[in-house]
Length: 154
Image (cartoon, rainbow, N blue to C red; front, side, top):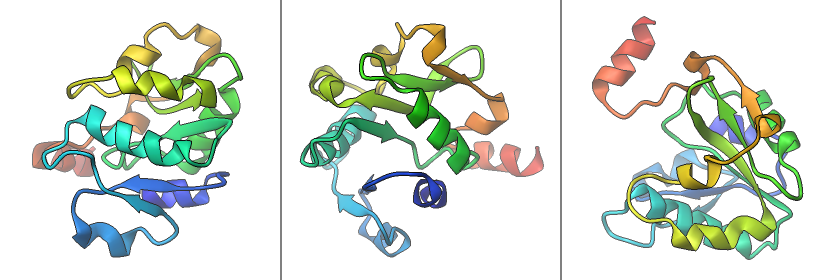
């Protein structure tokens, strides 16, 4: 995931990292610690968005470290699909998910997010023109050892 972000056409790269042992793997990123000791997904998002807001960005691209099959070209496509008025996101036809990109004005909406759901509520109303359709395999989410084993075998 970090390599895809490094290869994508971005001005700045921010990684929200709870474990300092991962820091050496993220050269080229501004490192941010989660706002909570035991962060939920919304806490990590808020920390990253808060750090990104300091750059006063036109757009913010959000990608997840546990989605190793996302390639830089998908990141670039999601970024290009984002408009001044609408966010954009990837979809496999059944779910809307990161990578996702948000116009800068929408960043204040992240303050309302709670729990372990992330940006899903902000993506639910996107029109089809703002979705980048990819295979489900491209959006594989690795949360457990079993998920990793399935990916390696698939």
